[in-house]
Length: 92
Image (cartoon, rainbow, N blue to C red):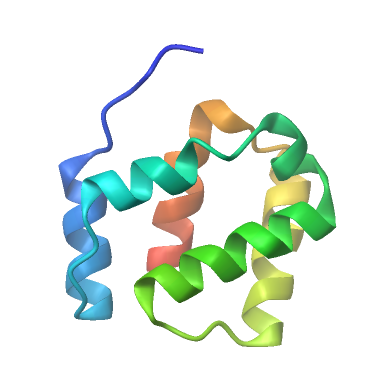
């Protein structure tokens, strides 16, 4: 899989929405641990959502987590469009 640079727009939106300063390197470090299995396995996906929540210091309710998991499963989302997942989470 080729390395893509993290969209500055997405990172800027995350920082603006959360009021936190999340660095591109911290996002890349977390993203490097994600595999296609992560996106397909509910337990792994929930773990990833929790890690993102902790990194952003923004709590994610159980209902929001359920919505994200449901949306990922319904869309068949994979590693090639993880930025779409980030954008979906920003809208919350």
